[in-house]
Length: 60
Length: 414
Image (tube, rainbow over all chains, first blue to last red; front, side, top):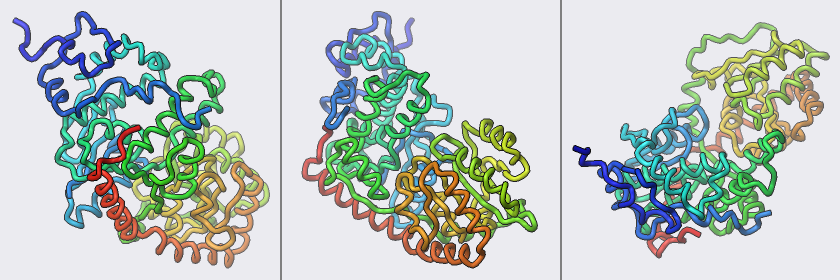
């Protein structure tokens, strides 16, 4: 019987940008991820896109 | 008030950031506030609330982050190994902070651009965020890239541009950013495009009472008879310019030998620097003390203090040397010229100019009255300028200002 606290990572896909595909075999700790999920502010996404684009005022 | 002091860097750590956080914690707790410290664990495997022992294993979230972000077309910049390391660690910090919870804090005060950016992304909107910027990670890393061309990292490389991005977004994500001097503010505004209206400038403070008490403690070290002590306390890393000091000491030894140099601190370059000292015949003239708990007592025995860095902000070591009553010689790199008035509270030499440094050391060894005069003026100035009470008062004002900004909706993260 699987550990009831382990769930598919795809449950938390909303945290990631829409181009991120779920890993097929990925499982995560439900208690940890659920606690994080409910503490994050609305609209929180990964990756941090403004940093990821590396396009900046004054950048060479 | 409940305050969260946060850093991306290690807690505990021998570096100045942790010492600074502990000083703020102590001062704020004396004023009736609650303070938590949050940062990386020394083994890099966890983030932790250092103040109460709560931990968060990065392994809880790293597999998910690696899997999802590797598949993300928006995260191709993570193919760069340096960027990948910093960013995955930063996302772990964000998720760890969410796990611990940020709702209970009245103000969040970060100590670097990584934690500033990260906590701005996960904190409640109404919670004020103050970001102390102690140095330029972009300048330090770029200096490292330039010194190591074999890494192949140039100005068009992702790692180079990433440094720029973190400096800008880190400093711009807080309700108020704080720098210790105008030099650092100028870097943020001119080199990285940060809005100057977001930045407050005030110097660090030092608990002078505590420093005096530690200076008076017994040390197993004694001053060698007939020698004056030239001290330098710093991490033994590239930016501290210890190799330049050793070069200057080799020149000094050729004209006088009435001195010994104490290098107080440890770091990645220790082996190289010890080798350099041996090759220059200075193995009996330079003592590598490594990391010490009795730095104030060692400084109290020192006649001259040197900081030959090629890049630094407002090093605590120089503040301590001034308060200890040593005659201070510093390079003109970074924020150092704002700490020493040449010819009145110390001597300032052009960075990397070992000949000039040697000449100044010679003058200070030769002229006892001049050395004492500079040391006295420096100590008098330092007692007033580096007041902990003044810094905490300024910091409390900044917390209030950030609170007002956050209440009105916050500046938002760019």
